[in-house]
Length: 314
Image (cartoon, rainbow, N blue to C red):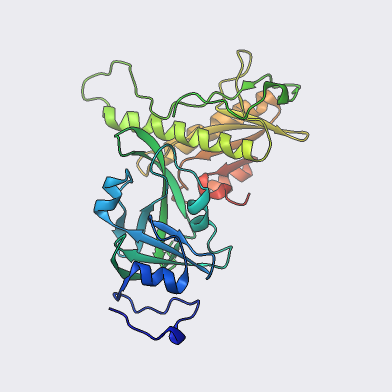
């Protein structure tokens, strides 16, 4: 147990790695929310993360895990419904920009163990994944990707908040009010036996739906109107207008095994849609591509390549 006099404590968390401290005492010294996994402090420049396997399961969170010795994946806050980069999740996503440090502890209550200071991966700070709540319902979860400090490595239909009268008259784009993608969708088509893993195919469908809705919510948060294609439009995933510019987006879910194929396909599709609609093309993927060359390839073609973490502050 760490024992120090009150005068020795400052806004900097100076606990030795592996030391133990009562969570109550931790918050008495440095502030922060006293319950839950994410505890941002308003008194000191710190954000505290608590990880516990039993607590995660009990509250409907995806299990936190070390991918390797230098990469920790941490499930965001929110026990029910889809998770987004708001409230406590936002405090993690913007910690560096807010001048705050992130500190990881093992355990949720009582005596907790200090793992050490940790920071968001610069390359891909977070992504969205398919998870389940405490009742077993599918939902969207935020997964933060964190590294020990100092390390540098290479739902159903919703239309709330969208007023049909807000739609802007576009010259070459008809569009209709955005139709939220079903994030619990599964494939109902009959498959040739052993040709496709049905679980992988269903996961791909849900990942695509999550990414599409994330982009639509980002557009709406900018006080713009996300649009779905009308009968006379090409089958794009999402479109919107900002001032005099029209944007059309193709959404793709990617994994290492299909990244090249999906990005090539997505670039071709969005270039076609952009040409038909006299619009700017956006290729939105659910994860940052492994190779940075794809951003250069997209830019050379006049397409903006984006992913969830790239939207923060944009």
